[in-house]
Image (cartoon, rainbow, N blue to C red):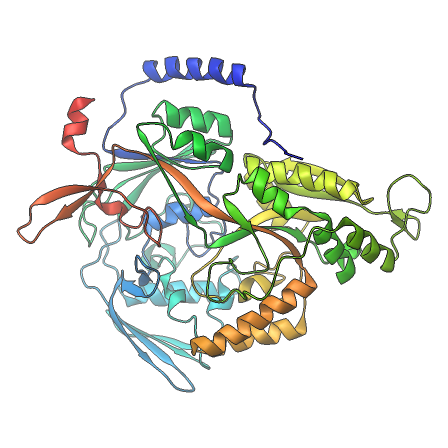
Length: 544
């Protein structure tokens, strides 16, 4: 049975609104041309890398702040940002020494030093700080400033993800040392060392940053970036089509249509993440592994990939994206099998004793609420399908949508939900300790309260091992166990898809300093990897 993606508005209404929007665009003041306007379905929460948990906050923080290092464009190594170089010393207590760049300035003109790095670490480790980052630094034995431009960290034991953790944005000591980091005004008016300086934040409307003229890698070619919050998918699409938005992520049903627009270029590549249904393990409904297996067997994930994603993805097999080296290729997706689902539920005591079509146990019906964020049409359509498919095996699901900030604060962070549809964007490194280890239930990302002592030990072991082949065995075993345990229903690994106005080019210089323009291409590290070199060439500006 073919299932079409639901539309929020009819085609006729869409054309009417498009015409209205064109009139509106024609009447608004001219925009600065050498700027990038980005669309987001959700607002940021904290413009502070230590506190941020959501993608919108992380996007803005990447413009405003720098880490000591970052991944290179091929995601197979690191390049320095605030660090000029670094030295790694192995042993029972490994050390990393960072040699920092000199002359780097905070946006207020104060010089960046190793004291800022130490301060960032101290704030992460402060129990009063509301951060989910602490687990990435808990194996640090000592962090020390050797001189203003040298910072050393010593670990209690081998820690394979150690270097990567220092890609976190560094925050300024001179502005925050006397502040309550959880409530400071800095979190809405940040000052970093990054390529763009904060200008303004209008809640649920836009966040604006402008080029940092004193950026240590050179002033960005773009004058400013406007991050517009547009929760309604159809309105965001109209803004792209009428050139009010320059860059936007796409939903699968938009991709084929948008790639045919002459002034747009659509991009896609496998994502470093997956989408899932997370079950709150504190809810007695989901504490029996057989019930969780049954729920996965009852959901037709192949149908979701084919008809909701339009084929732009693959069925997930576990907690790792299917195309990465630490994903176990021998673990296959649990098949869609409603009969098996009913058998497992029966084994765990769930039967329809009163003939109303809903399973019950000890007088209580199998009924729960599934939630996700509004504005994400793909997750909404998945929720509708899941609701129907679980109803077919006798489970009554109420499906609800909430605005992103409400969804995150009142339900996910508060651990106040039955089940949720969400997605993870992961790192290149396989360590997902902060998502799955039982120590991360209260203040980490393990908001489903999952506990498995054997898997806990494996996550710990994986962090201590440097050898790739030995790490692979550890994570392959984690993958096997989690497939058997089904703490989530792992739904799918989507393609990352987006669209950009073709007016943007990348500026390159040859050996003699002459500039040329080339088309922007997708890097393994993402489309925005060379953002500071983007611009709208003067010829295009004049044509407008």
